[in-house]
Image 1 (cartoon, helix red, strand yellow):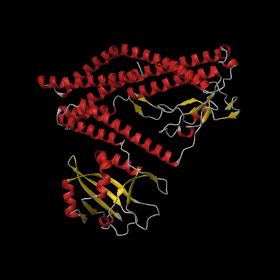
Image 2 (cartoon, helix red, strand yellow):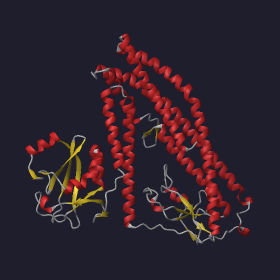
Image 3 (cartoon, helix red, strand yellow):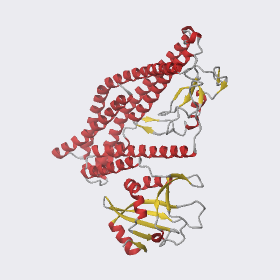
Image 4 (cartoon, helix red, strand yellow):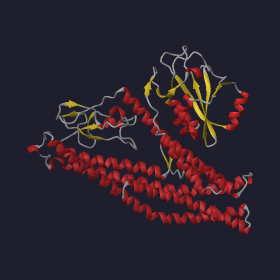
Length: 504
């Protein structure tokens, strides 16, 4: 079993807890229809079902949780072994390339020199396993309590919503359970007050513990061969917390027995220490960065980043954040679509799922020609205007280039997610071949550009500001926002607003 399998097991448990709850709600609706139950009688029946739900959950999941926790311990131990073996391979490869071993006769340090170190690491690993399993046990208890609490809350809220005129039984139950279905069973509360599902917490905790165990294994092998220097791998998308250390040589005083003052006997140099880097944020939960052994004379340190590389990192990081947000929204509406009782609500939520899938997909869409303005704001080229067309906004046009900033891309994603994918793909076409340009009377040198793309019944509208000689040097025409506009709204615009341009 790997970390993915364990996370999937927890996800299945959470889904079944929710599904069982909603089945009870649905089943008792059938009973109400048949027997003519009043809401007070329904509530009493639901409370009886809750007590049965609690007993069955305790019995059903106790054994499952025990088996999963055993697998977590095995997984962490395996990660240590993998780190140990893979590091030995790397060391032997370095020896073949000419790296000079410091041990006697070109061999690892005597076992007597490292025995205590290994015993210490054994204790550290045991403590890591114990802490991880203990935290998971507490989270497992918490999800059962949370399921019971949410069930009880839904029972009482459903009657409240029904009494206030929610309409049908199904709509009342949907209103009572919407919050729970939106966020899942948020059973784990972090120090900052945020709540997370068992799935999210387990994924983070197991991945973090496995990585630490792997680093224990690597460090043990370095210690055996007398190596204390490592180099942070330079990958394409480091997170902001880890970026200051990526590509740098460090002394590993955490896993490889390096000196705490950063002095490396082999090179005679001082380097930053791993412990210092960790204090600054390196290897935070869910961290994707890693280090490898630094062999003097063989390995090459490269901690320099070009402006272009840094900009690309920023773009990728923000796109990744947008994608993750879209994924969470997609999962939220999938739960609502699956478990809502009202058919109209189900249909609405299924449409939301498709919209957020489109947003997630579009987050990978790369707008060409990344560049920097004077203010170092990340911008992207999205086309060129025809000056003869756009002079209807203003005759003072400095450039035909059009850009959009990352901030405005995020604005479109946040405010108009339904239009996001089409906006990103068709923005260039809309700019270069508009069907209408309508006056924006609220802002100078700005027009409403409309392109008749049928986006699920809507056309595409974007707000474009023209750069004039009054603007700062280096500025360009820029997209402020973009969204869908219905045929009815477009007709209203054409009747009541100033149409500056109409395509022949």
